[in-house]
Image 1: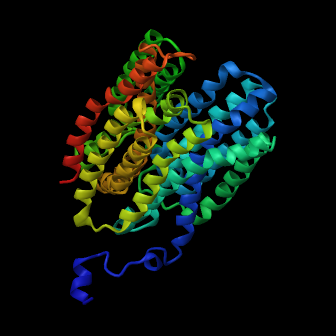
Image 2 (image 1 turned 45 degrees about the vertical axis):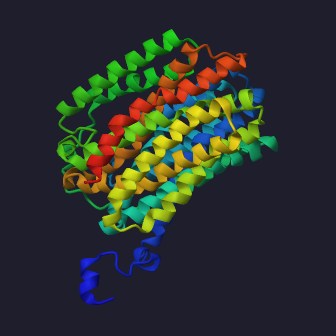
Length: 467
């Protein structure tokens, strides 16, 4: 390729040797490992919790082992951009990893469910900051022309973690060593804490640290806002869930209102006027809310309607993660000219998967459910890396860290909201421990079909982002 062609195409000739050259392979591996750590640990509780409650009791509180982790993760992730600016990316990541390490150790030593839940809460806080910081680290460690490839691999690692995290937890649990699972993750987090300052660095942001104050008023509103959706996702009454979700919406509204007035906001306020940032975050919000139902209720419906085993149901859910990972890596080499097509196609494919679930989950066959999972995961894989790059690149320089950190925060918050809304639909339609098949089929239709309208603003945002 001529020098003129190379100048016109900044991607020209750049394989992984060039992308990871100049010592960038080390932060790349650390970023991928950190994403694995948060995503996999967030899910090992799925397969270790039966062994946990058999050992220390507290079966009535099992739902909160998930809810508290997610609440803390969302709140903490919102602080990622500010932490990077105040402490530097390396120090902030080391601190968050150290908190994560201590929390894993606390879970491993838990004598009862109360201590275990405290450990899960602290784990969520450390993990939430970590995942935001690793998204920010991509923009710090790599030139912008490489962001898409790196974000594609980050997305692939996230999907692989969702597949292998429960498997790892299951192996420990089957061996009667559930505490060892948390010790293992404590050791991994400790390694991240030790390596982060050396591999990620602490390049100054150029913003006076004295001006970077924590916006406590907004943060205080965010906690009950997220907690309201967490409560809505675990209570069994549709009425109580609706009240909890309404409270969550109210406090989230106050959070956004107060954050705009803060001297140091958590969100990239000035960058919201930029179309890529606003459209990218809205697209993630809508499609994440709309698609979480299968992860939450898919296994239950598959077991009770189609009489598959829990293991088989778990693998059906895992198909979505595998499709996300494979597709993300496949499209990672797409040039900027192809990004708009991938973003639009991703939105369409996600919606097709959601519509497919509404038809196939109630009535089958199983291959159609697997196809729907492939479409839904593949749609996210098609578009995620390009959404991430455009959101980060579209923000003003002073808010790039906040914009990059806002993406995983938005995703986690959306899943929390979607889980709460799915619970309202399911409980409102009479879901119970023993539910007639015809009722389950009705729930299986509406729990997916009811979310199709949520994708409409997501489509509009996708088309705006693709401009």
